[in-house]
Picture 1: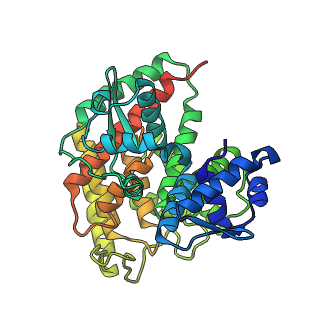
Picture 2 (picture 1 turned 135 degrees about the horizontal axis):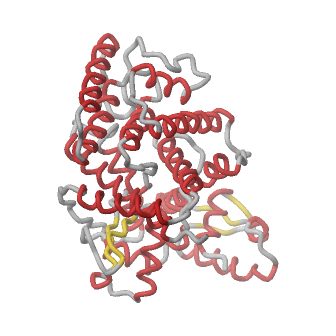
Length: 413
């Protein structure tokens, strides 16, 4: 059945539209007219639309905020009708209070609890810590906070404790390796979907307008989005090519060097005059003057120093803590050196993945629930914080392993 939010989105997207046009736009028949009209009346009572001969969206902050919430969901392949349910809002409000929660913390039907945790995990807003008993963690996302505030719910999130996730990572990594040995799963197919998700996430953080569904169709099914500019499509395809080269190189245990880094950038930024070239001018981060990048005259010296540290890292046997700590450091240092005119952050992420995957950590996801934490510790940060960034990367690695293990466990031959 068509929801009130389905109707609102169509009206808001069009600005002004008749009820019969709403019915047709939603692909419904005349028998659905009354339900859709009733939803228009409900939206009018909520002061989100107004009617005369057509239905118009109200020019208000409230209407704009609701449209933004729904648009975010559509862009990220999230079912907004699930996210905007009263019971889901109640669930989110309670789940946000504790870093780790179980059903005993939320007075809700066990079936609903499982459905919501599975949905939020699928969308990338929640980590399932354990399944028996079912223990979860809701990620502190700006979207979740905005959603709760819009519906006048308390958005009081837990204070995250600093802790190492390496014991859990080692346990999940053992499960991953066991799954590969005993299960006949098409790992390449699983990796394709995960790679598409990472490419979407990485480019979305840089402003690429392709949605998650569009990115998946483009990269997995070769279906080109009709309403997107060629430049955005090419940017996505180029980044995939650089990712594919990185995945193959890390599988072959090929070490990073300056030449390979320039090659990654050349592929990712193909068609740009500056592709694969060290910048010879100063740059700054838009909207964050406190994120200081290197003077162009210091780039070669700083890159050389970073690669010396990388060689030392590679030449010495590393435990799990050391691998993750150095990968996080390399990302942060490279991003602050900022050796290119553009494309530095996406290459920083790619290089971090190269290091992690080369050392047996199959990281290939950046769930949307981590977007804000990641940005707050990188390009939106006021000061560098390698310690908390390392904790974040540990948690992202753990989430990657849990997700891929769950996918393999659920695979049916």
